[in-house]
Image (cartoon, rainbow, N blue to C red; front, side, top):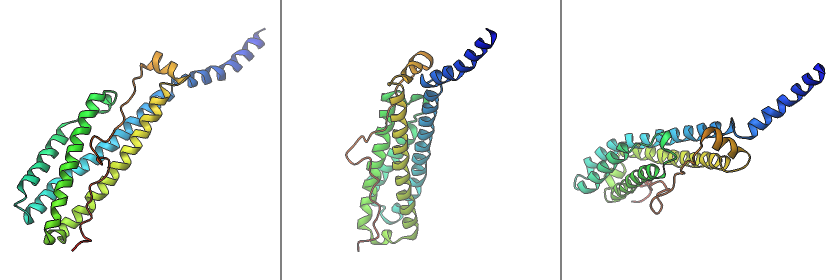
Length: 202
């Protein structure tokens, strides 16, 4: 009888572990942490863009001082974008995510306007400092696009897990999981990097 109990216990342990795993006890927090890590990547890349902008503005100002309105718009949009913070614990709050998206979208729009004005200044287009900043900005916009894509994929995985059986059991009973908010474009073409290739026209 003792041997039977040991055998039953030995056989039931893997079944219990499998059922716990299937209920999302481990997979839900893992998926949530992955989404939060991807969000941290997004923040790093937005900060990189924000750090490039003052040098870009100063370079353009040196050649196009008269574009003061455009320059001011970029500076103000950058200030607002950097003041609107969104930490990982707020990712389930659609309103907080929307405010962050709107601030970053406004910066993208004003930055696009600034870069468009460069067309009128051939000397600026060929300035080495501007060309270096242009290259860094283009690379950063690409990194932002990739990190947003990765974040949205992690959010999709997490949100799917907490809504589908059997993981939804652990999500509701143990974790009290809430859906995370994906990042969406807030304006037409806001998900595209500004065009910064000004070296091809005369």
